[in-house]
Image (cartoon, rainbow, N blue to C red; front, side, top):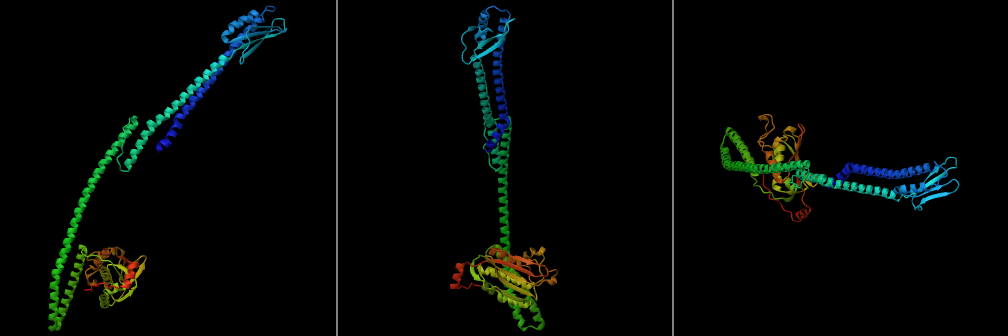
Length: 478
C-alpha cells in the first residue's frame, strides 16, 4: 500500500539509520583504540625491559654480561621475548635465547659503560600473540556490528508491523467510510493509540450505518407520501376534468338549442328585437367558446389525446385552419402573411395544427390593425414554426404568467379584446403533448414572437410520401 511504500523508508532513514550509523562508528572507534592500546602495552613492556638491561650492563665494565642476558630472557618469557643480544664496542657478541621468528619485532637500546665506547643491546619479541589479540578485538567488533545491523532490520520489521500495518488498516477503513461502505476492521492486537483509533472508526461505521437506515426509512416515507400526493393530485385532476367535461357537455346542448331558438325568432322580429337577438347570439357564441376551451383543457389534462406522428409539409399545416385565421384577421383588420410552406415536418399533424391555431389566434387578437407573420424556418435538424406580430409586446416579468389559465395582461376591462385567457394555456399543453416547448421573444412596444420546434421528416419517409401522397384527416375549426 502507499503508506508502506513511502512512510517505511522515511521512518527508517529518519529514526533507525542515524542510531545504526552512530553505533557502528562507536564500535569502529573502540576497536581502533583497543588495538592501539594493545600494541602500546607490548612496546612499553619491551622498551622498559630493554632499558633496564642496558642500565644494568652499563654499570660495571669487564664483567661478563651473559648472566644478565639470561636473566632478562627468563624474565621476558611472559612478554614473548625470544632472544636477547649484546653487541660490544669491540665487535664481540653475547646472546641468549633462540633465533627470532618471522614476523617478530626487534627492539634496540644503546649501552654506555664508564670510560669505554658505547655498545648496544637488542631484544627480539614475538608479536603473534599481539596480532591474535588485535584480531580478536576486530572479530568482537564485527560481531557487535552484525548485531546492530540485525537490530536495525528488526526495528524496520517492527515499524512495519506495529505502525504501518495498523495505519494501512485505518486508511482502508476511512476510505470505506468516505465511500459509504461498511469496512471490515481487523481485530489483530495493536498499540493503545491505534486501538483507540480503531474504536473511533468502528463507532463512525456504526453511526454511518444507523444514519443510512434512517435515511432509507425517511426516503421510503417520502416516496410513500409523494406517491400519495401524486395519486391525490391525479384524482383531483381527473375529477376536475370529468367535472368540466360533464358541465361542458350538459351546457353545450342547451346553448345550441338556445342559439337555434334565437335564430328562429330573429326572422320575424323588429329592428329592436333583432338587436337584442344579435346580442343574445353574441353571448351564446362567447359561452360556447369558453366551454370549448374548458373542454379542450380538460381533455389535455386528462391525457386522453394520443399522439400519432406522421410526415407532413408546412403547407399542409398552414392550410389546416387558414380559412378561420383569415376570417379572424379580416375582422380585426390584421394583415396575415405565410412563409416557408415547402419544409417537411414530422409529428402529430392535428395537435401541431391546433397549437399553431392557438398561437396565431392570440397574435391576431393582440395586434388589431397590425401585421401577423406565420413562418417555417430551418433550425439545425428541426423546423421552427414562428408566429410574429407587431402588437404591444410583453414585459419580461409577465412572460411566464401568460401561459397560466385566465391570465390577460390588459390593464382594464375596457381594454380586453374578448376571450378568457385560455388560448396560451391550451397552447402550452399542446406543446408538451408534442414533446416540444413554446419559446417567446418580446419587448414592450416592439411586438412578440412565439415559436415551437418540430423535427424534420426522415429522408426515407420523405421519399415514400413523394411516391404515395397521403392527405391527413384534418379537423375543421369550430
